[in-house]
Amino acid sequence: MGKVMTAEAFVKKAKDIANNYKTLYVLGCFGAPMTESAKKRYTSNNAYNKSRANIINAASSDTFGFDCVCLLKGIFWGWNGNKDKTYGGAKHASNGVPDVGANTMFDKYCTDKSSNFKNIEVGEFVWMEGHIGVYIGNGLAVECTPIWKNKVQITAVGNIGKKSGYNTRTWKKHGKSIYLDYTKKPEKKPESKPTSTPIKVGDTVIVNGYGTASSSGTGAKTKVFSNKEMKVISIAGNSSRPNKYALNIYNKGKVNDSRSISAWFNIKDIKKK
Image (cartoon, rainbow, N blue to C red; front, side, top):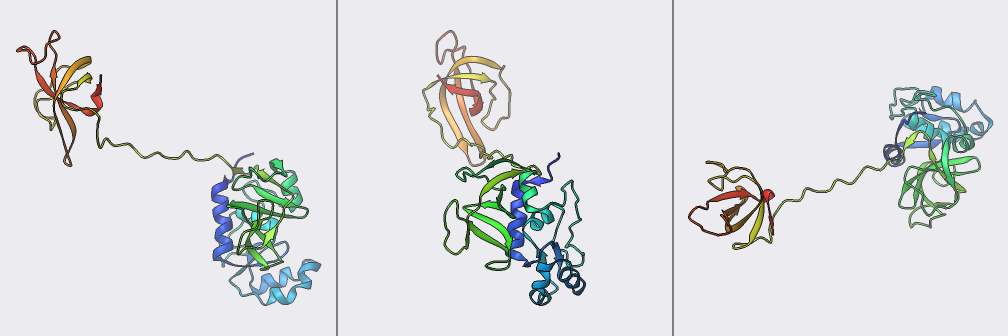
């Protein structure tokens, strides 16, 4: 079964909805803007919404309705906050993700389930009977619930610990959605640039490469040397050119022999003996 998106992208979207959109808990709604037609539809489709008709009818047309599992499904189905679309841009049961309830979403479509929250990863779904959310890191989750703020909101995961400024929910288990890719991107290490070198004038070095007649890289080139011993007679390097080393080539073990030569070599082609 194919992955719909990365766990990182899913969490980013969940946080965006919680922080940047007007939302309201509406049972069975996966992101519809609360237009008059939507209000009529949702206040008549189940008893729970009927009991909350006054709350739903009071919502502005730029408010989007979700419930807990419909928030997750809405993201999978492509919800993008489009107020001109019936479901905010989401397409029902698209991207291979079925229309299922919270318990089935966790029981059937999550793996690596655990009640130990010590090693929970960002993007894992958090679950309790009849309710589901997504872990976003730093001890927090995004969930849509009628309690507290009555909308999509960020809450503390009580299994990890309370967080100042957040309401706290203790979940039963967590698990990885089969529709998310949890592969972590390798950290990009900055390229190391030679700013200094332990090599100094007078050192003996091993050369693998060729030299040039000038430190700017112009002029005649020497032959390519392999594991050749040379002596450092000068060092050049400034902001306009890379470090270069003037090396004197040993000839039959004698330095500054009349038959020896000097040339400039790149730092990458030499190492201290």
